[in-house]
Amino acid sequence: AHVHFMISVWSKFDNTTAFYRRLARRGELLPQTVGQAQAWVDPWSAGGRSDLYGFTKKAMFDVGVDALWMDATEPEEFVHVHPFASLTNTSIHNSYANTSVSTGTSTSTGTGTTT
Image (cartoon, rainbow, N blue to C red; front, top):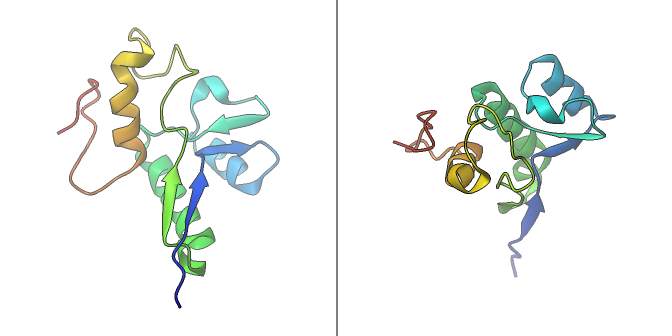
């Protein structure tokens, strides 16, 4: 029998990892989380999204993981998430989720909506 499985992952990385250092060097972390013990990938950064996908593909999909549960894709603890600094968490909730996973059919407009 063939087993299928999903792994829950967060787009948050410890500052002691090589992947964190790579994202930090490229400016692909949410700025307000840089310098903390862990930082989040900036989902509005095309490079950040691409690097996260490449990392998860190599570490997960290429070794047989069938699916990822992208946990913590909501900005629940960020009241000042860029580039929507003047908006509330609730008003940008869907924007964050839509930019953290690319389906090839949805893109962020930078206004809290997708096209």
